[in-house]
Length: 180
Image (cartoon, rainbow, N blue to C red; front, side):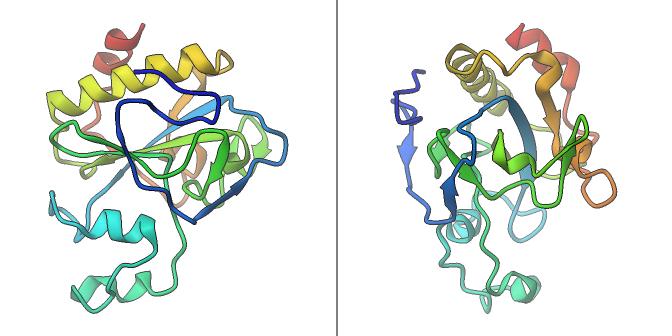
């Protein structure tokens, strides 16, 4: 896996989302791991893609009503199969972290990469997802050396009062053993 000068991965599906903007300082120094499934707990649906592309049908499921008008994105989404989809180039700011803080610094979107894993807090992630995340993480560290082991966190670490992902099902030690 290789990241070009515009921040795009060379070997994955590109689905450019409009839910992004310029990074205020151009800095990329934090990796945030999330989970998502739409509807909650259902996998391999089209709805996460629809959400990140800004075209989700909020009438498609009874739980989608609170998604009306929501403008969110991630840099990448890793499906249960290990397929990686890139929505936002790493050189741009994706809208994934919301109200957040890392080491006393607010607005983590400004300097972070957001990777969404298709999953839930309690459902074990697949080997294919760990393999894809490992390859992606290594490519990110190579391109953005400010991302170190201590600067790879979960959404729960930067927004602890409102987020729990990637959840107890994410095996941090196994992931770090794969990467480092």
